[in-house]
Each structure stands twice: as C-alpha cells, then as structure tokens.
Image (cartoon, rainbow, N blue to C red; front, side, top):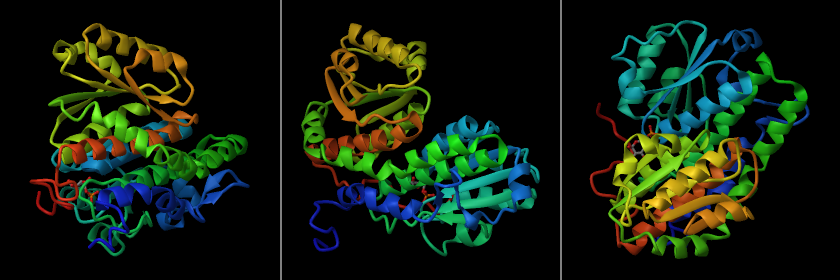
Length: 368
Ligand code: G6P
C-alpha cells in the first residue's frame, strides 16, 4: 500500500502531485501550435460537422460537472457558440431539446456513472452528436458513445477527484479551441490560446511548489464548521469545485457561490465564525470581487484569497492568501483549483479525516 502511494501519505496527495505529468499526458500530441488549433481525432467529426455545430450541451455529475462549467465558459468565450451544462441526472427527465447540430458531451472520470450513462443513451436516441470525455479506457460510456477523448490522466484511486478534473479542464479548453478555429477564431488568436494551454503543467507545478505554505494557511481554517467559496466568471465553477472538495474530505459544510450572489442571501450568515475563500486573481471583474470581499470583512468573516502572485492590493484585502501565477483566466482555473485541492487536503489531514475513503462516498456511483 505504502509503495503504491509512492511515498505520499494518501492517494489524494499523490494524485494532486501527479497533475503536471497527467496534464502533459492529456495534451501530448493534441496541440497544433503552427495552426493554432487542437487535434482531437477521437471526436471523429468531419470538418463540415464541426462547422455545423450550433450548440454544445455538456452533461456530467459532481466534479466532472464542475469541469463542464468551465468548458461552457471557454466554448462561449473562444467560439461564440452557445454552450450549456446540464446535470446528467436532470437531462433525460426534462425532454431535452437537442438535435443533429447539437453536440452532447458527456464527462465522466470513471465512464460508469449511472446518471451520465442514462443521459448519453437519451442523447443518442435523440439523434444528436454524442461524444465522451472519459478517463477509464473501455468503460461503458466510452463504448456507447463511440466518439470521445480519453484523458490519459492515469488511474485515479482517491474518491475525491483531482487530476481527472484538471485533465478534463485541459481537454475542454482544447475542444473550445478546436470548435472556435472552425467558427470564428483567427490563427493568431488560436496560437496564443494553444501556447497558454501548453503552459498549464508549469502553472500547476508552481502551486505544488508552495504546498508547505498552503498547509500553514490551512491550519488557520481547519477548525471552522462552515465555509463560503466565492468567485465570478471562470472562477465561479472553481468556487463550486473548491467547496465540493472541502466538504467531501473534511466534512466541513462548504458552499460555492457566485461572488455577486453573496449579497442575495448568504451574507446574512457572515460573522467571525464563517470564513470566506475568495477567488480574487486578476481578471475581468476583479475590482467587484475585491469589494465583495470588503463586504465580508465588514461582517468580520475571515477571508482567504486566492490571488495573482505579487498583487499587493488583493493581498491587503485578505487575512491570508495563496498565490497563483499570472495567466489568463481560462488557464488560471487550473492552478486555482489545485490550490484549493491542497487547501482541502491539509484541512482534512489536520482534522484527522479518512481522506482517501470519505464516509458515505463512492468513487463511482452506478445507481441512479
Ligand atoms: C462520484 C465521485 C465524484 C465524481 C462523481 C462523478 O460522486 O465521488 O468524485 O466527481 O461521482 O464521477 P465520474 O466518474 O462520472 O466523473
């Protein structure tokens, strides 16, 4: 067992640290820097089919759904075609409106999640283009869709998903880039995005390098019963995923909220014993997020900010900070998510939780 964990105390920590390598494996051979696009032959789409895609509908559960939300932002941002995320469990009970020019993308680490599989079958029946983003080779969802992209992230043992999430996000950025280049994006802009995607493993490594600092910060937040995570834009799904990680492994009640929604209810709960973890890195709307944090501070809530390295203004606004490297928002989601994985890990470790086997949770949920 100890050997399998490669010297790490838990599979989760091992898998968090494997992320630079996992993401390299995910993007290897799939970026065409010269043409500024992605090569995703597993999607099995003709150039005509790609041009004809008029909407992307992403389905998944749990962490995979959170990755999908980032994909939604990227597809609309790069390709300017509508994208939506539907909770897989809702999909087939809602008379989903999908046709032959809609691509349904199912995201599942295991490829066995019952709700996601049911959504895939429904989408196939409706005649839409169905593709899957799966980690486990030969899994049911991979087989039933016939079109798809394997993550190549390597086996994920820890129940709380980490490297699968960041690999999923990396693939979603490549899918968005590919669709965008067939729709509206120039070669130059495509090359820029492709280069940024190639930097993701380095960005993650920079966060892993400050693991000790993150552990120190986590010690200040390990004894609360609740936490709010807030973010906007691309960082909103990261807030959801950060909160999910914390509740899964530390059993602290955590909620992810859009920064702007805080004042529509949750702010009523803010006081000294309700910490706020704010995604505050530099990007559109950062000024507004900083004033949201000031509102939290005015209610005496302790604030931990995930900020861009060297951003003194953001640092001053928070009680504690974790720094992530400067990069565009669409790739910053990855180092920000890794910072929150490590934060959740250390909080759970300090609390003495069974990190790799949290109570009541299963790695893959095969009943609806
Ligand atoms: C379970 C796991 C989560 C995972 C979700 C979806 O709830 O505990 O970590 O995100 O299933 O799993 P999938 O394999 O479909 O990505």
